[in-house]
Every structure is written in structure tokens, then in C-alpha cells.
Amino acid sequence: MTGNEWRRAVVLGGSIAGLLASRALSETYDEVVVVDRDELTGLPEPRKGVPQGRHVHGILARGQQILEEYFPGITGQLEESGAVTGDVAGNVRWIMDGVAMSKGDSGLLAVSVSRPTLEAHVRRRVRALPNVEFLDHREVVGLRFAPGARQVTGVRTVERGGSGDASVLPADLVVDALGRGSRVPRWLRHHGWPTVPEERTQVGLTYTTRHYRVGPEPSPGDLSVDIVATPDHPRGAICARIDGGRQIVTAYGILGDVPPTDPEGFLDFLKSLSSPEVYEAMVDREPLDAPVSYRFPASLRRRYERMTRLPGGLLAVGDAVCSFNPTYGQGMTVAALGSLVLRAHTAGGSLPDPLAYFRDLAHEAVDEAWRQALSNDLGFPGVEGDRTPEILADQEYIGRILEAAQRNGDVAAAYARVIGLVDPPEALRTPEMRAALGAG
Image (cartoon, rainbow, N blue to C red; front, side):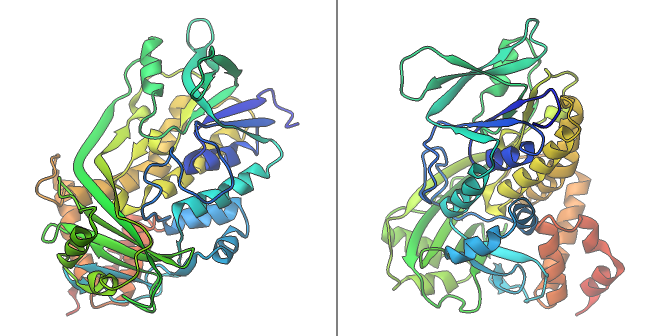
């Protein structure tokens, strides 16, 4: 028993965001129930609820730190399962416009692992918590409100694929971790609450992935080779060593540029990139499966923090609040940061104030990642959006940082720490960084 009156929290969705939210809530609530449509087994296999799960995933350095804080020793367990680790700036080969960044020592750990394996390890650790229960094969079909609809008091669920009536799962707190497709904003409108404001950035992204048997190339000392899409070369690819003795290759194009799913077309796409390294390494490598694609039309941010009123007993985390262009690898780390905000707002034993929570979630978890992603996306001329003077100035300065990073490993390491959401953006504007920009 926790000694407080708030006994049960219900988390909607058992993906990474929901799992980390459950871990945070387990410190305060007597009972945490995770509801998901899928069968949440411990097997490291792709599942229907994560349609992008077959593609390359990255957890940024700050996310890795949070995972290790929540689940001590999990990094070592991932390594035992075949995950590959190294320094973010020293063992990842970043290539932009055909030129590689210099190597540096960031002091941050990169973990290269498949999404199903990562999720299985996190889920196993959450399952081991004595006050967390998983309710799978259940679909959430609505919220239950107290009279007057001022307080959420539970959720309505049905068995997935079943025809029975909905059952009510009472809750003192409901946390939406259903992802970008969450219907919670619609349910709020149905009960008379204002529309949650949304922002979208249409990127028209498609990425196509194929797995290969692991080999020494394209870069023997690196866990990953990332050929980054830029305005001059708007195609990219990531080739990473992962668990299972495999290399995963994810190629991507924006604004309707689709990497083909036929084997020859996939290789031709890799050949067209600004650097030939991934193509040359994979052209004769043994493939383990056929190429598969996933489409991501737009980045989406639900601006809960701009609401003037919200019902009590309802919060949200992860992609249910903000879904980023996945080429930046921010989603799982922002979900991890959001779980820290959730933990802080539930730690006192009283029901959290939703308006205060969403303000802190924006400030402490979402704003900086969204700023970075938006600035990068608007660097492509075909992406529509407001290119404010602040964004244009940021793009110009980051361009200078990236140019300096080609010749200076310390600059590359500093940049890696900022995009890893460990250091604030001001770390790139110190006198030492500005001096490095002027060095020839």
C-alpha cells in the first residue's frame, strides 16, 4: 500500500511510452493496469500495434540514460541479447552531402538494437513489478466520466475481435499512450470539452527496410552508418548492426519520394545516395527478408498545454502528444522524458493537475525535440511551414556547426550531445564552439 487514496492508474497502450509511464506510476499507485489490443508476450517479435516495428529504431542518449535509471542493468542485458553499443560520436559514421563528420568522444552510449528486442526487454522488466498488471487483447472504446464530465473515472474496453458489450475498468488516473492515432481527443469533444489544438508538418516520408546477414562493411569500426538526407541530397539511409547477427538497412525519401520494395529497385535507391558506402556493402550481402515500406505523412503535435481547461484524471504521453519525423529518432526518448514528468506530477500522492502537467511536459520533454525536428524539416524547400527569423537563424548556425564537425571531432561530439537531448542547445554556442566555427 502507498498510503494515499489514489489506488489505480490505467495506461492505454503497452508500447514503449506506455511501458515507461507504467514504470513511473508504479512508484505511487497501488495498482497499474496496462491495456493493449495486442498479445503482449515477452517474445522479441514485431507486433501489429507497432506497424513500424520492423524498421530501424534509435533511442537517443538521454533515453538510454533514463532506461538504465528505471531498469538498472538493462543495457548489459540488451548487449547479452546481441545489441551493439559504442560512443554516439565515436562509433557512428555520420555522412552529410557525401562528407563524413569527424569522430569524437561524446561520452554517451549508443545502443543499436531492433525495436522488438528493446520493447521485449523493457516489457519484461515492467512485468516484474509487483503492482503492474497487463490486460491485453482488449481495445479501449471510450472514457468513463463522473457526472458532469469534469472527471475521468475509468475506461470502456471490449475484447479485441469479440462481439460482447463493453466493460468498464475503473481508474483514479488514465494515461493515454495510444500513439498518434489516439481517439482520446475525439472522446473529449464528444463529452463537451474543447478541441485540442494540433500542429502538423507534412513531410511525406516513406522508408523501406531490409535485413541482411551481418558483415564487416560498410564501416568495420562503427555500429551504424547514417547517410543523412539534406536539402541538396534529399534521400537518406541508415545501416546498423543489431541483434540476431543482422544488419538493418532503412532507406528513406521525403515528399513522396518512395524507396522501392523490389530488391533491385531498393539497391538502386541506395546507389543514388550522396555516399556509395551502404550500397557497395550491401550489393553482394545475403539478404534475410524482402524489403518492406512504411509511410509517415506528417509530424503531429497535440497542444494540450494550450488548453484552458481539461478533465481531471486524464493525462497523455509519447506519440499521443507529439509524433516526430522518425528519421530523427526522437520518439522513444521524448516518451522517456515524458515519463519523468509524469513521475514528478504523481509523486506527491494527490491527483495531478492536468494543465500544470501538460505545461511541464511541453517544456521539459517536447519543446526542444520539436524545435530541432521542425527546423530540420523546414530546411527542405518543399516542406510547407512558417520559416520564422528564428528558424532561419537556427538553420544557418547549425549549418556552420555541421561544416565544422567535418574537420573537428569535438564539435561533432558536442552536436551529438545536443541532438541526443542530453545537453541544451546553448552548448553549441559557447565561446569554444564559436571559435571552432572560425577555424579553417
